[in-house]
Amino acid sequence: MGSCFASWSYFIFHVLLVSQYSPANSWKDNDDGHLQTMPKQLEHGDGPSPLMNPLLNLFFKMNDLKQGKRIPIYFSTNDPSTSPHLLPKQEADSIPFSLSQLPEVLEFFSFPKHSPQAKAMEYTLSECEFEPLMGETKFCANSLESMLDSLKGFFGTGTEFHALTTKHLSKHSALLQNYTVLEVPKVVETPKMVGCHSMPYPYKVFYCHGQEGDHKLFEISMLGDNGERVEVVGVCHVDTSHWDPNHVAFRVLNTKPGESPVCHFLPADNIIWVASPAVTN
Image (cartoon, rainbow, N blue to C red; front, side, top):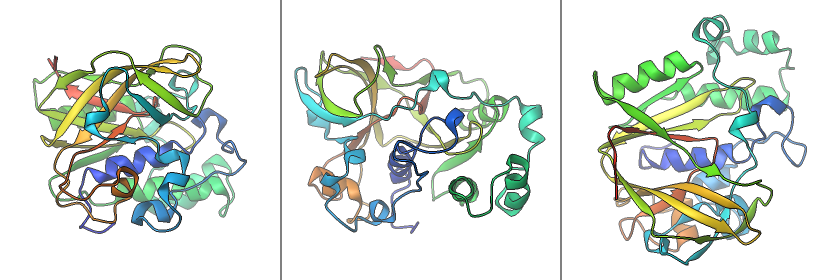
């Protein structure tokens, strides 16, 4: 990915990516029978209008966050409660986890070299080894211990932190529908945050990255047209002036770099880590 992309645009790309995968404990296919990788036209804004792709109904404008506003949102059916957890560090460390060792990893899990699973694993390992963009902290975590150690390094020694996630409060069945904002969204004030995104892999792997400032974080209570209740985490990237003008978010929101913040909702199997105490207004 070129340096012309804002580092926080990575966050959006991975939200789009992971929403296409089934839970990791059904590590075979997605809903249409094929394990997919990131469509290149989403990365570069090419191909058909993004409005035709339901996965892109995660973007919104900050002024959409008004009580009573109806917003079309795509939420994947990935359920964190039924997905594998992070492995214990000792077990994770016993399994090769690098692109150079991909043949050994595939052999360990008995996946053919050219299988959809192999391609997805290659994608995840490539992203994990990709150099961070300027000003960005990034890491991949395949154990709880490695995640917490990396988070301590980001937030600083002695700083407490906690997790925010999108929570479905009732049975989740509709992938795409209109959701109504039930009350004034809560603003979470935090100087630092790290987004961790569940990646396609035979066991739980998170791609995490963070930056200071230049963001707004919201907790939003919403009601779907079919009666589904959800507490949603929303992130807004305030300064988009240095983003690529062909970024798909601008096409979806009909805006331009620097014109207004770019916001997106967080799928349920992703995590936002914030420094504690975070102030909720």
